[in-house]
Structure formats: structure tokens, C-alpha cells
Length: 171
Image 1: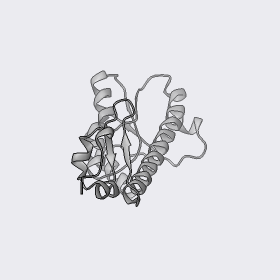
Image 2: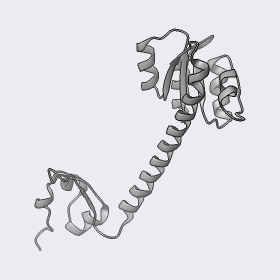
Image 3: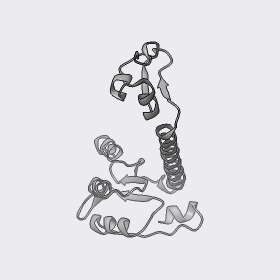
């Protein structure tokens, strides 16, 4: 907490000491970030990450531990942690920058997901037939419903085609 207060202006900090309380708080409040110790009295940080994911909770996480372990770091990242930090004398200097970076990456990920959802909606609902083609191979990567209707073929057939082979059925 002191490291954060030293490097950031006005953060609201909630401190909990066990996995169960942490998951409960995550369900009750929206947090900008979770700084999560790996070893907790009633489980591990990996347990918290799994419980949060199972409940659809989306908060960026920095996992911290007193003992660096590459296997735990990899497991934490695969489980959704944005970063992993070994507690050393440099934590006071590294943590505020890591928090800012993690919060910003999470914000950018959310913005990207929102943009992709808008694109998908526009693509799928367009009245014109649209397709996405891999430029080097000509492979069709995606088509919308309007194109399926226009050429009279289902999406699964169209995705197996190369752009040069795309044409309307005779008739």
C-alpha cells in the first residue's frame, strides 16, 4: 500500500488477506486493478484468478510473490494475470509504474474489444455482401449473411473457397 501511495495520486485501496474475501469483494465492487499475493492463508492467487474468471469478473491483476518461480509466473499469466512481480527492495519503485501500465493495457484491451464488437455488428448487418480475404493467398476468411444470400451458398462453403472461385450459382 505504501508503494502505491508513494507513486500514485489518490488511489482508493482495499486490503484483504484471504482468497475468499478477495473474490467476494471483486463481486461487490468494480476495481481498476487487483494486486494479488500468490500465497494466501486459504489458497493461492491462482485460485482467486480461477474464481474471478468463473464468475466473469474482469479486473486486471498483478500477481506478486516473495519467491520468484517461473512455473507460477507462467501459470498466473495463463490464468489471466497481466503481470507478475517478485517482492524485492525495488517493489516501491516498480509497482506504481507497473500499476499504471497494467491499468492502461486493460483499458486498451477493453476499447479494442468494444471496437471489434462494433465492427462485427456492422459487418454482419450490412445489406451489401462483404467478405474478408487473406491478401497473399486469396483465401476467404469471413463472409456476412448478405453475401451468403447473394451467391446462394452457406458460409461454411464460402470459407473453404479462394476469392477467384467465388461466383453466383447458375440460374
